[in-house]
Image 1 (tube, rainbow, N blue to C red):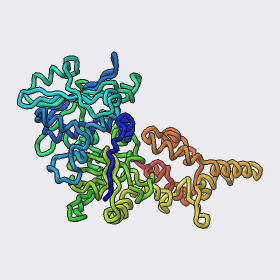
Image 2: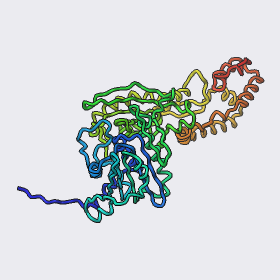
Image 3: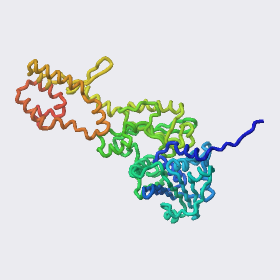
Image 4: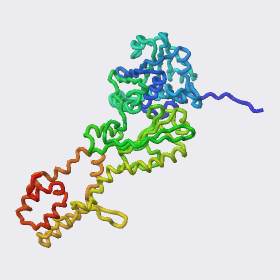
Length: 472
């Protein structure tokens, strides 16, 4: 018969360990909002101020908790992740309120009101570390808590307050508020738009948060591919790919808005929703390379809240590691969608290979590789070269070789990725330039065969009337 010994963890050391699970400020706040949504809240107020010390508070108008339920809610691992949950339950481990809060502060106070009865509890990490016991405080004075007056005016609701916020500097507050606003606008956009005719309102420091739908559904140029319903592990998973509009179809402001904080390239891929809440976004889960050609591809996945194990959802609800069976289904979707998603770019790229138009630039194959080159068969170039002496012609050839060899591909790619609307390449050749060139060509008494060749060039292909002396 074996013997046992009780070996309790050192509370202080354990606390510091669970504080470093990896929450960012905005992800921690989102975890609190999950509880509010589960509690049926329709309004959430967030308070964040740096003076005199950083204080965070969040008030919801959900159903609130009686004292016994509040005490249980303050327990770490209050629920079993294997238990079946209500459809609208956005939690899993029963850790979110505590781990999210501990990651940002050393003192967590929760005040809840149910049927007009107020209850409060507090985790003070320094106190329990010194006591080396999980001693939950029952505060005797909560009068200085932000938003308490608003809670007292309500019949039901819950107030969460963070004090001794030690992972954020005062100088960062403005940036933190902006990042949190954008994160919540994306993660909870369906709730902010309205789920089952119920609209959730969230405000930070009295400034309402507007929903951000990452798929730009209202734009006519957004391609919505067919919805696919897949049975995985006996549960229904809904997948729908979207191809966002090319920047030429959008204003600069709208293009930048839908780029998200991470930019188009890092925002491509899957967007995983669980019960209308985004968990993970902008990832291929290692199934596909992040490519510029696919930066407009975003694929929406909806799963129920009983598939967390198969999708590898972590405590923070910000990381997923889908099982192999799921990945096999996703690979098939990727291969179908990325070809379509690349068309806005490959279609434009093929213009340079359009044989019906005489281009200034051409693509030269070099075995399995290629390079861009000035088209020396262009009629204007051929005419220019014919007028040059041999020494001048050789200088021109040398210059063109340098021009081609040092074409700033990296700079072009960077600018196109980050500020495509600011590129004004067409202004290098003005209307006045074309008119002057046309006048010179007309005065040169050109043969008709030469004019016919010029009409095929990029300059005249869409304005042939200039050389033909016709009205537009």
